[in-house]
Figure (cartoon, rainbow, N blue to C red):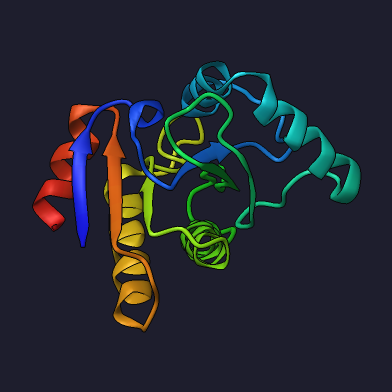
Length: 168
């Protein structure tokens, strides 16, 4: 099942929430900062361990940590592309964020997962294009046999919420 809500991703009691992280994994602005603030220091500590082991997270990839004090069990950190006009592989990198996050979720026994609108804030990805990519990747993933029960798109702003409602 795929649903869309408008709200705060840090408040959802799901198995995993996805964080629109940066390559450093050390927190930042937007949803990344909100997740780190709400989840407390345990998330940052695990991010630091991942950095020490593999040097951060590449664009289009994902890593998983505890959710700390959040109602979720895990945070899946994925690094979306910065929009540069769409000719530097941004659409495929964004699609890879969703695929990598879903694969990591299933590998960790996740049944319910919530996504923010990856790359549509300060990274400047056009919201209609990002919504199309997100929905297509999730629906393709769910079409195959997997244990996911619910995917929630959590929109922070009215524009994204309207785009997702129209497309779903």
